[in-house]
Image 1 (spheres, one colour):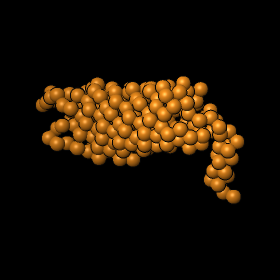
Image 2 (cartoon, one colour):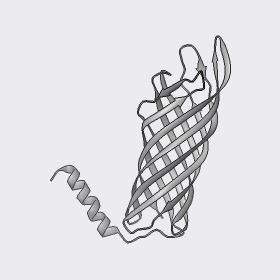
Image 3 (cartoon, helix red, strand yellow):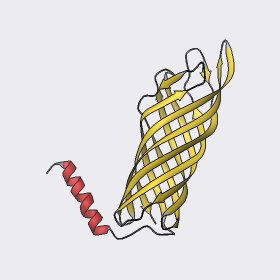
Length: 196
């Protein structure tokens, strides 16, 4: 039996042994997640300057409270490192968002849809000839995913699409201009949630 099959068997066996806690109003969720961004675009508003991002990563933490048996409200903070070959480095972004999650309670499997909207704080890398300055703006994202419940522990995976809009300035020897940075991402997030 390969290692992957052993792990899969262990997860399935744990689900059967520890299953039994179905989501209900009053449950609280503490989530830790890894963010994988296989595709993205950064548009700086400079003469239609749009760049395809390289694969990027991040991590996040969330806290939710189930207000009814199928709906939770909460917030998420993500730290994201967006790779940019054209800008000689990576954009660093913090997203701080309120969120709502609609889920379909199950004792083992719990499909869900999630929407969040909030603030984006962006630190661009330096360019050779000019500098993009720090900016603060807003973002939104929508996801679909699945939680595997192991008693009071949940493993989750979600796929989603998001956009961020951040006003900034580009400063250089021949330029000092206000611009709007737009970031579009396709994301896959994997994580664990503690249910209490």
